[in-house]
Image (cartoon, rainbow, N blue to C red; front, top):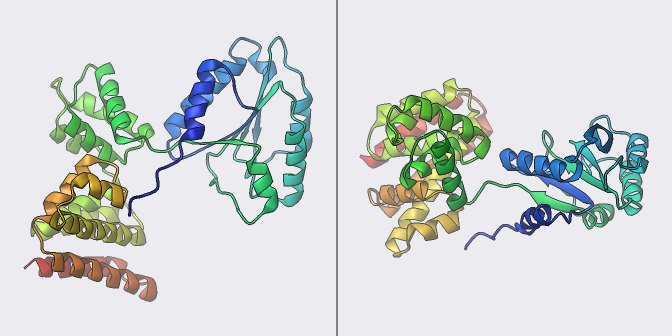
Length: 346
């Protein structure tokens, strides 16, 4: 079954509204892509208070110490030589706070003057809405809730190419897909990795070898490499990769989850291959974000049987169960899993 397409309507509308200068009164900004969140928060500030007297028309609050009285005072303060004031509140759990605070907040929102734009920014706390609460449902209708999620592959690859070009470097599409994959696909960490690779790569054209030399891969990328090592019967390399993850203090439960996910994706790739489906279909059903990862899975699927994939998924499930129930010797259980997977290959 294909994954449900994400709703980007609020994000698209925000970009349109910023361009046209017709902004909403109340926003919630949240999401994994912190680069985009910070960028559009800056754009919002510039649009509302960029014309001068920012110190008078910009109110900022820490949600952990926010009081209703101080918020009411900010709302009641008229803008100085400007059309609007901007009230920015960081890490206030709108839908998870006490009911009395929620009621007081709704009262403020219901009577919010036209000259006020209020934005709640979720940074260090999780954004979630308890749908069982009637008051939360009422509050939700008042906000424009903008999620800044990881960019689609095409947009991200184009952005990576532009970042390298700004550093007088070039990168082809497959190599751009690769650096996006091993860096996790989020723009903020990618900025630093692009700068490191550009400084290391002496030629104008960026190479995969330069990326491998200086980029620290995320857990997901390492487990892909670990899976490759198992499939290619490179047991020592697989153990070294596992040791690296443990040395980096990656939680063992995250490691087994990631390995299990790769084996399930490999099983899906094998089924796709035997059914004549493309790697694009695999990306859709498994929510894989990069062509590089999907093509790698399809390539590896050609090296193993359907029965091997099923047995591998079963071995991962058994290991996860033992880790959850026994709760000890995680490193030994993970190493034993690699031994068992390698034995299946023989």
